[in-house]
Image 1 (cartoon, rainbow, N blue to C red):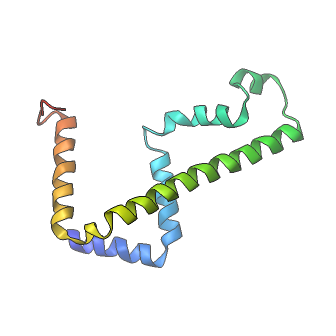
Image 2 (cartoon, one colour):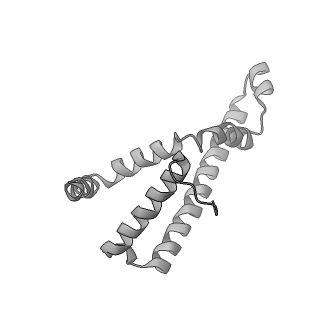
Length: 125
């Protein structure tokens, strides 16, 4: 059952890698641990507080500055995560090709989930 699911997901990714990556990135952006950071990023990029934004109309120069700052912020984030991914791929190599690694990691994730759910309690956590 899961082999067919993983095969179909790989098939979709082979056909539409950019769309699948975009949707995955969008879903991770909308996750509960990232979404509260959006206002902080917004105020960091713009340099304008929410009160100032409500009270005044932005000039075209300020809008251009915010747009350029946003592009540079996104480029910086993208560059850092690309470097982290490339370094991880170089260090780890093709370790995930082994089935036992996938099973072991899946078991660890399931145990962590059971711990968070309160079904199992680990003292070291």
